[in-house]
Image 1 (cartoon, helix red, strand yellow):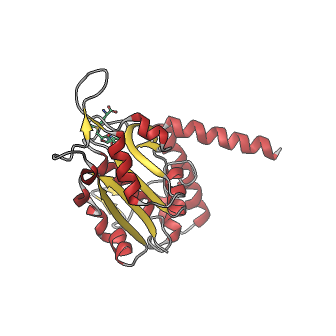
Image 2 (cartoon, helix red, strand yellow):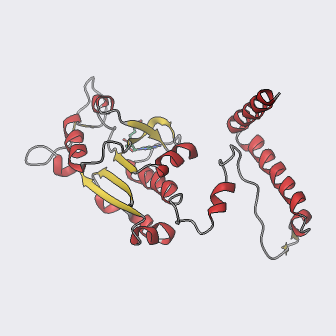
Length: 239
Ligand code: SAM
């Protein structure tokens, strides 16, 4: 059975977009996953099919109406056990753990916002998860939805060439990944770290672990603290 992505959007033509190419595209063709869209506009009100209205309390911009969002959600007839996710900068940050959870399930229902966003009452009443792809503001949720889908689809069984590459990559163990090098061994006078040419697999693994720790400590103090706490916790539990 395929993994089902259902996207509620004002711009259905943006899907599958870049995910129709490469590994994800091949998986789509092979039925590993499905990408359906529900056009929010079709559930708009009146002659102009209005989906939004002015914000209560005043202020700039428009807000997507709860009744319109709800009609679109109902029309998807998405299975009850599929998580419903609204992409928003107000959401909790998307992590690889979320991605693994979504990919392990039957699929996801994604709601793409526009304007100032979606009426909060709808999100609360329907138990919609609110997820952000980063601390910046996009013009709409569609590109964020594509990011989330890309991250999920590559984890579906059989999509990635080497299953091992998913196990070793950044975030899989709480650390950023070690750096990579390929031929030529010397490029513009820059040499590949000697240990990688040594054929000594234990030494290579040790070097990679040290580099993963160093990079995480330097670039992501948040991940580094969490990793240290987990490591120390595990050590304490083992004593
Ligand atoms: N007024 C909103 C705020 O400040 O939180 C921003 C609205 S933004 C212009 C329009 C839509 O883009 C949002 O409803 C959301 O669906 C999407 N979006 C923007 N930035 C995002 C992010 N970092 N992560 C996920 N979705 C985002």
